[in-house]
Amino acid sequence: MIPSKTHAVLDYVVGILLIAAPWLLGFADDTAATTVPVILGASTLVYSLFTDYEYGLAKMLPYKAHLTIDFIAGTVLLISPWLFGFSDRVYLPHVILGAFELAAVLMSRKSTSLVHRPKQA
Image 1: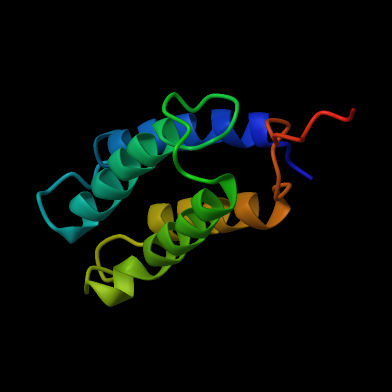
Image 2: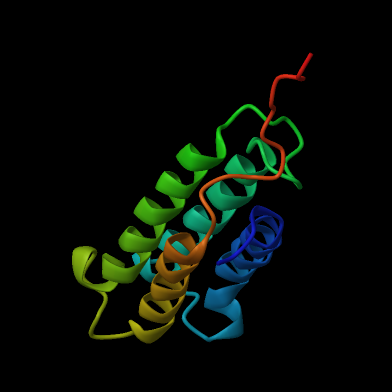
C-alpha cells in the first residue's frame, strides 16, 4: 500500500511529468495528444495543493475525493488516444501514464496520517 505522503509526492512528480511529456517524448503539436496530458498535469498540481494530505497547502479537498479525481483523470488519460482520435499517431505515453495513475490510486491507502481524531478525556 502507498501511504498518503508518498502519494502526495507522486502527485507532484506525475503532474510535472504530464505537463512536460509532450516535449520530452516528441509529440508536442498543439493537438489533443498534447493538450490532454498538459491539462491533466496542471489540474493534478492544482487539486493536489488543495488536498488534505501531508503536502497539500490549503487542505480543503478530502483525500478520498482527491483519489476519485485521480481515478477519473487516469482513466481519461488512458483512453484519450481513442476518445480524442489521435491513437494513429501516439498512444503509448498516455496509456502508460494513465495506467500508472490508476495503479497508484488502487494501491494507495484511503486515509491519511492527518486524520483528526477527537482527544480522549
